Length: 95
Image (cartoon, rainbow, N blue to C red; front, side, top):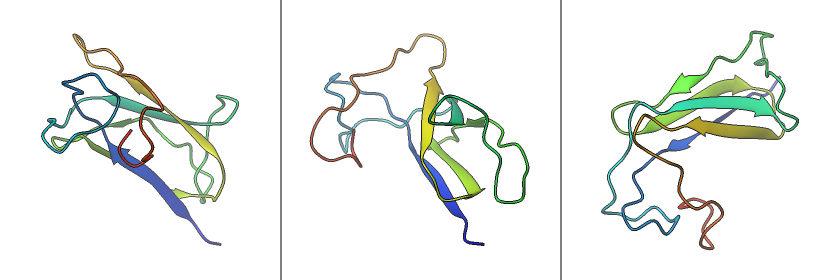
């Protein structure tokens, strides 16, 4: 069975344009939840529940050993932060 992973980086959108600029700092401590497209719980390729992740000091998070499929990633910003503009720009790797 082939497994896959989902992950990326959270950052502070200083200019609030929804695009991750090279000079914008990473944001640690963000709670990240992985669900199915309907918001339901996800199990990994071994049948274990996938727990929430918290971004590390560099703002990175990863969910590993997943079955190929479509997932929804949700973020809970730390106190004092709000989500930035979503689906901004043309490069999905930066917005």
